[in-house]
Image (cartoon, rainbow, N blue to C red; front, side, top):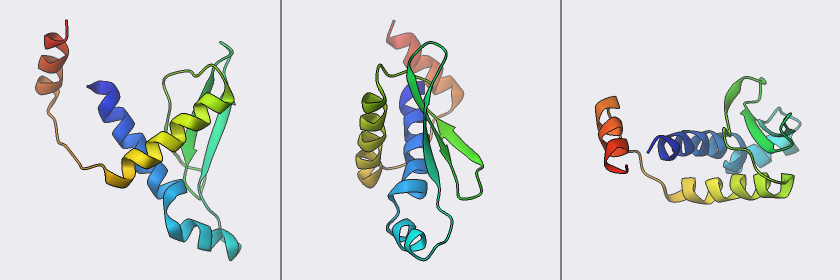
Length: 103
């Protein structure tokens, strides 16, 4: 459940940073846009960070991906999910109960 909520948060950030149609328009007019950084970490796995137009960190992947291509594929998958996703509010206790049920 924690991964789902984290993914939803990151996905929302991705939509705002990279998936918004006006981001393309701003880039064409020379205005700053957000970025998705693909990073090879010390363990040899690839992760991504999402930054807004000012370079402020918005989120990133906690899970390492085997290749840069795999990390990009996850970013693209998140964009698709965000296009149709809805918000779900959860309390910490509910999340803990969900976790306990999965054991």
